[in-house]
View 1: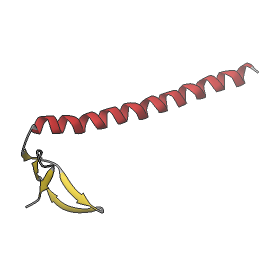
View 2: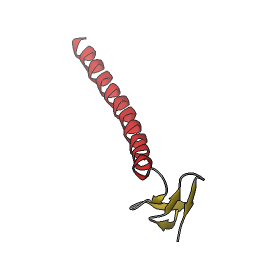
View 3: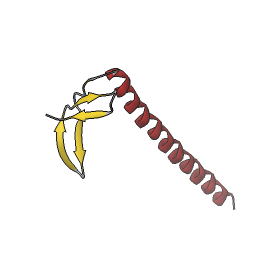
Length: 74
């Protein structure tokens, strides 16, 4: 019986680590997006970014108008 209890404890730690990793991934992903917007601060190019629609690449390094929430591709 002791072996079975130990197995359950290990499994619960694995599940907790998985959940923690998922939550941290969401936080880091959201934080990266917020940081990119903060770095831009206003209008400007998003260097290194790619605009896609339906899986097709529209353009890269778009110009962003933050006041009117518009992205311009050349």
